[in-house]
Picture 1 (cartoon, rainbow, N blue to C red):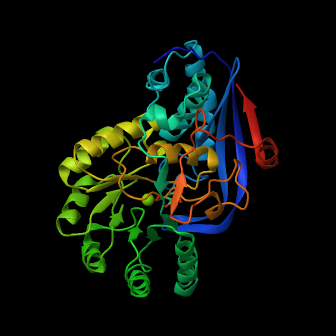
Picture 2: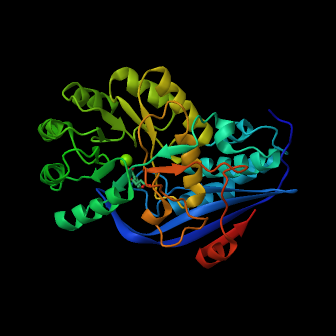
Length: 372
Ligand code: OSB
Ligand code: MG
């Protein structure tokens, strides 16, 4: 697969800030602005881009933007560069394997290398990964709202645009009643809930009540480090449990499915350390007969394009949180990714990720940069 060795001249880190069209609230806090690190690889004749999905605070996982910046600048980028030209994308994971954790930071660097390497060969990410479709079904993740009316209005707007599945964020105190009301209003809409690990096994009666509402799945109800309790809860429910935070690798996915801790897997390349590991999670889920789908971290078009390519894999059988640019931003960094009226988005088919940041928009959103 390695016709081209990729000689990296330099790596640039750019921190960007982009306003969100509406605040996004989950059980662990609210985001009003998107902050991200973009990693840019410069080689002889091609550039490559990757997006790091860390939030500004270590709430979703132990990684956060400030830490990822240092991990990239002090350890990951120097280790990548020290070993010379890259012969194949798997080299990235091998060179960074000595660093424990820091998956989101590693994923961003791997994405940038993959983008550059594939551009040099004129191949799209979706074809390199083995994607089997040119458009993918999209759902939408709805933050916790101030009132049920505000939430319903937001949801009706998304359904009018064509989204095929609606995911409601829940937290203790804003759960059963909200979901019941939404279900009452929308009896036929594929609905799911995402608790972001906010509950205990002693809350099982709440989940048994949710089990009556015909949800597509219940995402990450319990602690991110507890597969055994998820298995105990899953045994009491008909609704599939989907794990997000708990799955950090293909190894985790295998264990979770085998233990019965979940029946569905949410795949996010940042959370599992890269696009290639994300494909291995997909392969493990497919082999064990568990449906999977591609999640999101409010990415700009740079990260979202890679998520769309992953969503084209054959074992991805449920709509993802791969929503359109306008669900997040008035103006994305890339050309906008657009939802079609049938609720799908076209998978970018150009070389590499198939998108790139537009210079003017990028420059207007950069708050910090460093070249290594
Ligand atoms: O739990 O899936 C999650 C966003 C940030 C962090 C965690 C999650 C989410 C989402 C939104 O649910 C997904 C998206 O639209 O990108
Ligand atoms: Mg989630």
